Amino acid sequence: MSARGNGPAPATPPGPGGPDHGGPEHTPTGVGGNGAGSALPRVVRSDRRLPDQDSDIPLPNIPSPRLGGAPKDRAEHRAEIHRRFEQLADYRTDSARYRALRDELIAEHMNYARYVASRFSVPADTAEDLEQVAYLALIKAVDNFDPSRGTAFLGYLTPMVAGEIKRYFRDSTWDVHVPRRMQELSLALHGAPAEQLERRLGRSPTIAELAEHLGAQPEEIVEAFDASAAYSATSLERPLVPGDEQGASLGETLGGDDDAYEWVVDREALKPLLAALPEKDKRILLMRFFRGMTQSQIGTELGVSQMQVSRYLTRILGTLRDAVLVEDGEDEKEG
Image (cartoon, rainbow, N blue to C red; front, top):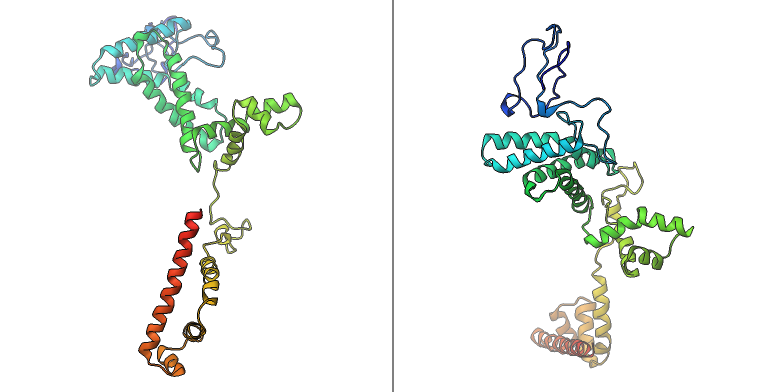
């Protein structure tokens, strides 16, 4: 639409329009009845009219995209978007016209994708990440939208953006991965569904009441409460006393495997076997393993050679080993 009246035409906001995208060239002088004015306005295309300030009544909870100027009539705007998607489908994907129109459609709906992302209540440092997820969803929606199905693009874009953001929450914000069912129940237990039940009952609901309200089993509710702890993890390097960087850390309070437990089991298994040995065998074991005597010293004590002592030890230890293995085999059969 060419400029009307005596003043300059309103400038088209920055966007994918311009000479490279089928848009008009900049005019070097003012456009109007008297040609006055220091600004260098641009001619507004007929299919990119700027709306009056308050004439475009927004949809409930979902404003129309305004980048580049939306027509005053929402139905006309939807039809125009649909026509442009039909044109996009006719172009070859490697053509310059396809890339230009694709970029234009993406840029024109970025405000709307950002709006859908803003409906999720998140900390400020996460909001920018959600916007990036929303933009990626917008690109996917533009690339995959099929105008021949007769669906409006916003009706396709909205669940696409919301779904990508929910997937981001599910896959990227939990420090420890838990099953999707547990994630959903955990969010419900700490969100609006559980709060609604508590307001209706006037007290904290029981596990059984929560399970009935959320359509789950009581065991799943208990697991979901446990899964909530996996949302954020604490570093083992965290000081036990906040701010005391030189003090003990959380990791230092964790215990480790104690090999002495295995010794207890072995000792208890050997006690009755040692008690059943002949006195001479007990004496040899006492001198070798409890007094730390060498085989030569034991031989001198018993009046035998070192070679005989070695044979005694081999026989005694073999007898004990076989007896322990037999007991272990019987225990496994009983188990």
